[in-house]
Amino acid sequence: YETTQIHKTGKDIQMLFNAIPLFDDDGNIAGTQGTAQDITERRESEQALTESVDLLNMSQSVAHMGHWQLEAETGHMKGSDELYKVFGLPRGPLALADFVEVVHPDQRDFAVKTIEDAIADGQGYDIEYKLLLSDATTKFIRAIGTPDLDKDGKTTMLTGIVQDITHHKRTEDELKESRRRLARAQTIAHLGSWDMDIATGVLLWSEETHRIFQVFPIAPVTLDRFFGCVHPDDLSLVQAAWKSALGGAKYDVDHRIIADGETKWVNETAEVEFDHQGMPIRVAGTVQDITERKATQEAVLNKDREIRKAYSDVFSAVTDEKLIILTALEIEKAAGKPCGGSYVISGFDKLAESREFLRESLQGCGLSEDDVGGAVMATGEAVTNGVKHGGSCDIEIFSMEGVVQVQVSDQGPGIDFSDLPKATLMAGFSTKKSLGMGFAMILDFFDRVYISTSGAGTVLLLETGSHRGDRALEGIVSRGLMKTS
Image (cartoon, rainbow, N blue to C red; front, top):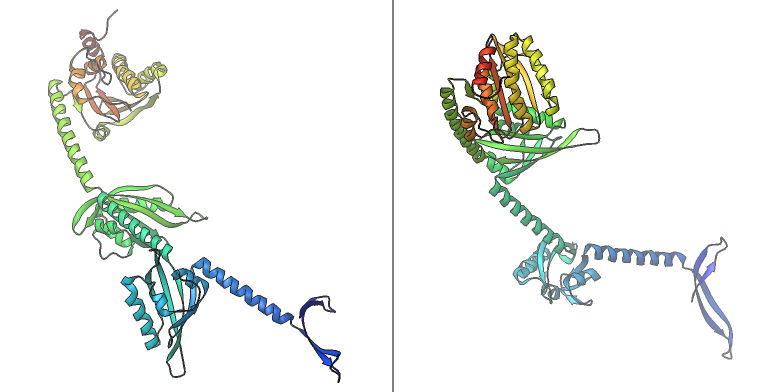
């Protein structure tokens, strides 16, 4: 029997006692003879082995992995509990044929041949195949086998593992399908993606990115290879944007590329990832082929230019070249040198102050008192409308070769070209977006009026020479745009 005893050191020990009776000559028990054995280490080893087996079984269960042994000559198999669970078989003595029966019919021959070749050649294997369980459930497993050879090199045993990788395979298939859908969406939208490791300088492009740039085969590229695709006229723009992005700025740039001899327009955006020290470590971005969009925009711009030119020609002829329609950039070029500063009118309560600013600035630019009065009055109409429709407006004074220019700009809805003829040529006409009667007053005073208008606002550059104040005021009164006292 076994019992727990206390050792002289105070530690519990496991003892095994054996005893046999001793008989006298008459056959009566005269005593006993026995042994006492300290089996503490044996029991601890057995406990450790049990725990190890339990841990192995638990690990195999968590990993859906079972181990097995196959006798090469008999075909008998044995294995762990998880092996039987993976194959959906009852625990007990089974042969290889029982396990093969569970393999999906489409791959059964493949699995059998793999095992037979391993036994014949003494070579291990690592394969994947499907199972079809009795309840019609399909599983994917990974099987690894290693032969045990005798001294003559003949396989006596195959030892290995099987792992249920169904979840992994389904996740892998879902990922492949997701990538397929993404690739399809990118193809439809002409939108590619890319990723760059700053440390290595390697760019990974999606398939659509390779198609956009016409760079094949599909493989990692370098930053220099990308820059080599950029149109030479846009290269400095792209490099400057890239450098700014690595410093924390937003990367969103339209530029041209040369793709297999063809010029394309692309839009690129990117986000830069920084480490805890603020150093860039990774960049992820998109590139979209916007060639068709650019072509459409250019066609619209060309049409707009044609319409603008037609209106400009008409206004120029009818007003004896007093009213000239320009673009905002052209107005910038038409403006002279700053003279008298600038003033921001943030509301109607600032109109009086703006008139005083105009008066002082125009006098400082050399206009006579009469000219100043007419210019302030006519400019006031543009300022009032600017505040009314844009919420605020800016005044800037310029001069060039004896000519004084007053620029009034707002961020209102602009004036429709269809309203310009009436707004500028018909006394009393007014719309919510037009300058109304004020435009006629402006034309009466100033020698030339440049106008740029769009949905982003209106800019007027009002130009006058010297000694015309009385004449201008007479014109304003004669058209009934103001009353005399």
